[in-house]
Length: 621
Image 1 (cartoon, rainbow, N blue to C red):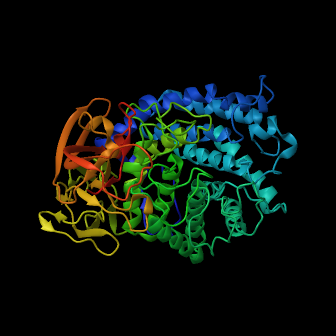
Image 2: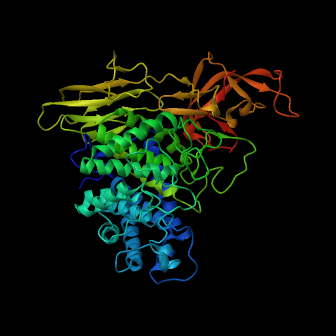
Image 3: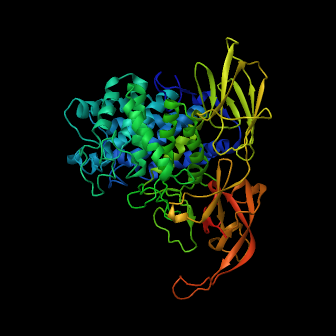
């Protein structure tokens, strides 16, 4: 069985590689997976009891006492955790994974009603309100995560009981919402993409038909107002008519994944067209430099075009994950490297920053600026071990466990490499690289192929790489972002790709008012930030200003305390000093400045030391 989170029909231009077909041996990806295995997943498994997830389900099954714990969508934490251990079982099996899946399945079986319904909150707290509050109940949202856990379990060869519970619930949803006359829609999209994948696993077409119906009916006013308005749940316009991403960012992005999934299985070109239209608008006007999405804390939402404040960036970790899901499906559907480019930007920045270097603390919100006098609340501040609303940590774990499936694809023509990570792919090629610290990528042919004929190796050239060489000759990507080499390969053949890792100053679009007149630093796929911990004594990071002509100097560090291996960037800057008192405005320039050396660290490594101020965008001097 193909062991990948997404296994589309033959309509996809590219076919994913299974997790078991990829071995990651080094670089940040290998470090993230090791920490996920050793620290994050064990923490998550503990939290399934401590946070009330499993106790809630036991109460729904008639066991145990006490009040319901947590939010109405608490069950979804278990389902994401189950998906994480299923993919991790494929990558690096542990006896405890299958055991936990069986134990969770037993709890689900006890809690599940005869008709297949299971939701601990509504069974324990509101048994008379089942499907009566779909605008905010998350009942189908939770079901969607159960379906994805079941797909992972089935493809990993564990947790038969999880698959059984998921199918019973899916059949119940079909009877209620496809053939039973109920036109309700969950206010939080997610079940759509999950239903399609469950269809791909089982061949049960009614799952695909229900996903199609839910997408077709969104935007027709069938979702009651939860108090957050129609934009919040993307119910303001039919999917095919909407031109821009709106409302709750995670909901919008999961919805888009479902839209592309349904296109891939039905061939409805109108779905792909509208999703691409929104993608282009979102990338151009509503995407942070880190790849993050969601600029408003109110509603965890997209803002207006170019509304991208650094200090109030919401950029939820779950939104980064949902964006990767959507972009991966678009990549499979279109074969265009721009989607792999955004996956890379998001993975190495908005997503990677979500987890501490030791793997046991997480960000819910990923701002691009923190001031010294920040007042922390339940979600804004330093990373935390867990949250009352803990949607992000197990979501992070399931993506890290499945990272191997996002590196490459195959076609009849050959092999496409999308992300450059040391290791082996499909038993066919070995990749040696120190990426993202170095731009040299050496690809060696390990297996020339059964027919020993010609086949094509396609290498993504990121849009940021201005001067790229392949085997020491200048290389220009085709319009789709890939450089193709077609020939008859022999075992031991090598290709050397060298990407341009020159550090660069990046200027924002002039309409992004929040950072107008500022610049950011990038090198390769990494966005950099300035943390207080790295600045000279007495120099506050919020007083820094950069010269656009100043050289950018690299400073490799083997083991930065609290961070690990990194490459810092130093540059000449000034520290601005302006008298404080009265209104912070003046008709005359009163500020003075002192020359200093400013130091930047990769954004994904921030907040692993003193928890002090940080900023990505720095004003120009």
